[in-house]
Amino acid sequence: MVEEGTKGTCFVMMPFDDPFDRYSKVFEKAVEDAGLEPIRADSIFRPGFIMNDIWEGIRTSEILLAELTGRNTNVFYELGLAHAAGRPVVLVTQEIDDVPFDLQGLRLLKYELHEPGWGVKLKGEITRALEEALQDPISCIPPAFTDTSAPDRPVEDAVINELRELSGRVASLERTTMKTEFADYPEMAFTNAVRYASNLLRHEMSERSIIARIRSRYGVLPPDAVDEVMEQARNMVARHRE
Image (cartoon, rainbow, N blue to C red; front, side, top):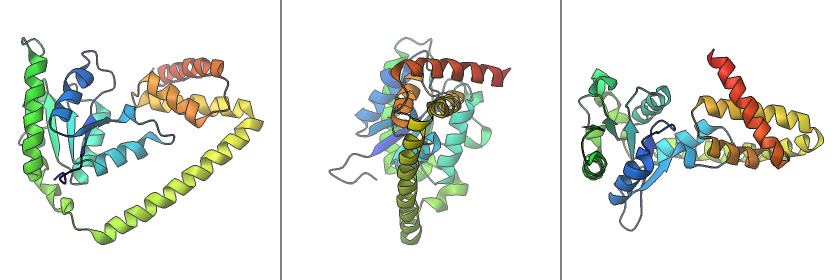
């Protein structure tokens, strides 16, 4: 439950490639109407490995929303992490066949793009589902994982906090060392930036977000080199998919 006077978050799991702009037109507004702050992986601009940000978003959100249309592999991976962590998830899909049979008994919303006013209708349904799920989160978690959602885990939380602090220190040292080395070896910076960008492209992150991360992580690269980094990263991903 969200404590009075605070605003919880809702982590939205969906493909970054969204031709119907469902996130900004429907999902984001629906989450806000439920009194929550929407978060999506490509809106997080911290430098570092993207899965760290995704895990943090999953683990700390009050509730999650998953768009399962098309059976996107990244979305299903994140959904598995959420369920294993005992987090409640509201499921959304255009096709019931895209939802695994074992999950069809959970809170599930189905919508049709060809229906007039589908966006307004879906927004209202998502808002109501989130509000109801906040009152009964167990209904949004597979039974096999409900034991992991117990709120009182002081020992585990203490370990997690310690690991997070150590991880932050290591990441800070890595960034400092990286910028020092790359200032002396710009070709190394370029090569590493291409590999980093290609990895994010394979995870379907938007190019706008990738460029922001490159500029933060590889600040020594001249601005005109970033376009070349993205071009080579696209080529690398294309070869990987062949």
